[in-house]
Length: 436
Figure 1 (cartoon, one colour):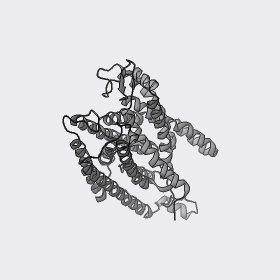
Figure 2 (cartoon, helix red, strand yellow; figure 1 turned 180 degrees about the vertical axis):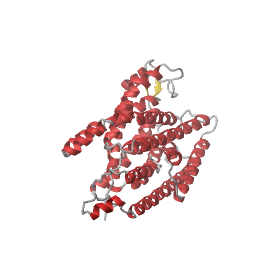
Figure 3 (cartoon, one colour; figure 1 turned 120 degrees about the vertical axis):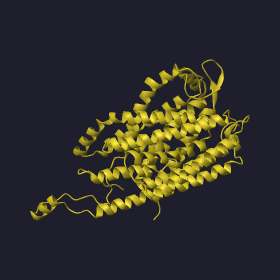
Figure 4 (cartoon, one colour; figure 1 turned 90 degrees about the vertical axis):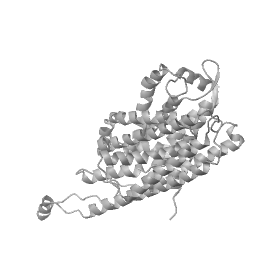
């Protein structure tokens, strides 16, 4: 049976808009404009780019409320949604995690190419598995261990290929990053994935029962993140010491001048915000139509398209002579590392499927407790238990945004969903929902 129109459009949207968001974040760093002092400089503003990302996420909130109003849910469901909406303030903590991770990634991106940036984010799977074992007492099966081993090997190959491509005295693809700066940039990206995995672990432990629709989660985190950036972080880094553009000090007034004086930068930023919105919506639709595991594997094609487009930009006039990345002898090492990362993601996903099968078998072996046997003897009805053929309404809320923006090569989405799945099986108040 072939894919429907909706599923096909969702897949195309996920790959297309996901590619745009990754490329735009790097391309805008290579565009130059006139700053507040009148000098021409590159738009190397990682803190501003973090603000743009949160602003793009915040657009999901009015859309979520519009869709909720359009559905005209029952009075009981509406009251439940209102109660959940009152707990939205709990998202401030995961938003803070997300803010730290996003800033670290954006600073790291200053020193590496878009494809390397995308591949290094596969490290999230390592930290998500580690934290799940240590803090959530989760056990890993042989497929998980094999997937993690592939991930470590693949990341090592990608990282080494990047360092080999840049030698002392040479620049990387026309940039100004030294081998030391490239190593530091990759370290920041890997560290950001540890923060993101810590966010997912926190959410799984403390917020598994927070019943807020995923689109609202993205929107609320966008609103909270934008507020944090504008009211706290941007004023703070304005007065920190250091050179503008290195990731510590950032002159927001200079940022504004660069945007106003350079229409190309303004267009890229606006495009990035709306691409983030479209990417989030497409990702939800793909998960709804085809499942989270398919979506995770599909994300690997996004990484491939980012690399291909970057190569096209470098070797064609479309790159204006300064955008994109070149193909070098060490690129073969990066390509092999990418293949190993993809294999690790698929193998790790197989481990999640094995866990799901074990949970299904455990649920199928359910035996009634003595109180229920007594109720049957008296002719009293017992509430039916949820079947594995019926989707269980577990919260995708907290780690949903993380899965939207950083799961290029990570298997953490199925893992966190499994943790919530287990929690729902143990909960006496679990609910069953029907969807296509």
